[in-house]
Image 1 (cartoon, rainbow, N blue to C red):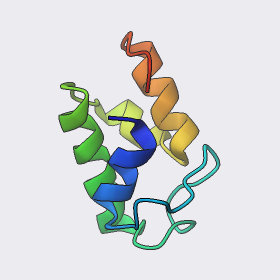
Image 2 (cartoon, rainbow, N blue to C red):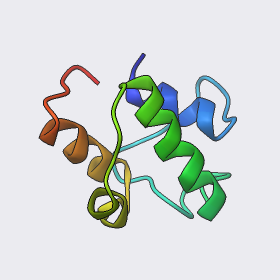
Image 3 (cartoon, rainbow, N blue to C red):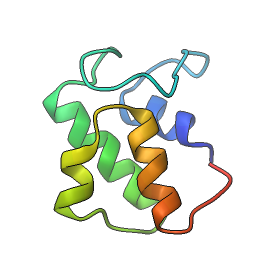
Length: 77
């Protein structure tokens, strides 16, 4: 599943909702503090990994999640 779809599902957005690398907390409906936890948990589940505290603190937008995934060798998201 593509990362953007993981984010859409975590935030209960419509399947066609635009999700870009620049999106993050406060920029998409539902991506508030609780939504942030839902997004990160959904990404961890979808890609079978765990983020550490440093990674979580760095996430300000979707591009930061992609950077964290790349650092773990994940491709094709």
